[in-house]
Length: 398
Image 1 (cartoon, helix red, strand yellow):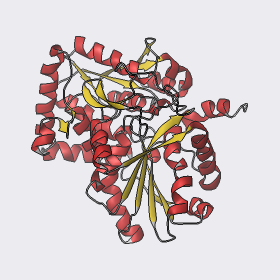
Image 2: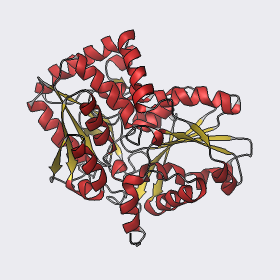
Image 3: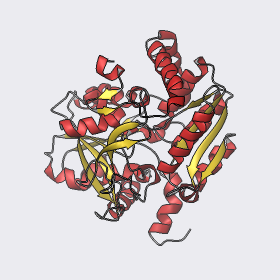
Image 4: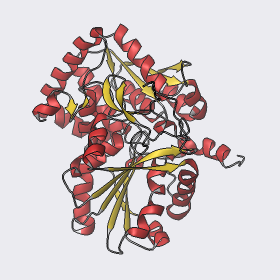
């Protein structure tokens, strides 16, 4: 980590905007992470669980039928959906629970929207015999019933959050409140690359295994040629894990795909970086781009995807946006639903609705590509959790 990163800043973004009571535990966490992120025994144990428990490395799959459908370029899918628990969230959850174990914590807590991070946290808590509480908005509990049952089955207590919009932002706020009251024995496993320092750096580092594997695998598949990288962005953990390895590769064009929801009106989407209405502010302990009203109040956002339904974004993404390292774009609900069905029909892979936003951008990108250009889309998770919601959205019946 550079000196700038050690101070918790990504350019002007990031920082630690938290109550004084939380600062001692953040300092403890920062010291522990700096120690163990360089400790070969810790790193070897993490690699062991990645391989033997989570199922890394994940495949880089050539989507031949999807490629034929668009008639240009070559499309590869980074198959994070094949991981244990069905999404990239397990990468970060394993890293943080191993850290919590070394810090002597007895309980882990988490926030969740789509439920995948909640399931991943409940999973690692069960694996290491730790108490687990997961905070989840009641709106998301209703649309992600399968994942709620999984968390309870794994031994976690799912805490319903009814305040505000009863979605991810409010679940995060409640988790932070609980953590502040139980800092001695509790570790908060933040699921995305958001929050106060050192969380954005720590989550990015645990998720960067995605990009490192892509670089190695693309050498075998294409001799190293890679022209485009795509990933969906809510808080941004799978995307930062995908992009970070290639941040200095100007020849690789990188697209972060946000939720354009129902339309461009304020409150009808979750476009934190791809909307001119957003601007920097402070949320959940960090300075980053936010969806705000004219008075600087964080506004309610919307997406069909629970995992993208968040009014902020990780501070490193804000820096990438301002520096032009990544281009952030929007995909609406209908486009995402069409991509969800398209990949299912053509490749026999049912993607998460979150990932479907990145897949949907192919319809706009592929006509611009040449036949020999290579496109990699990070498939952040699988879609069985979303089937009931998609059925309802399409007006179908089970």
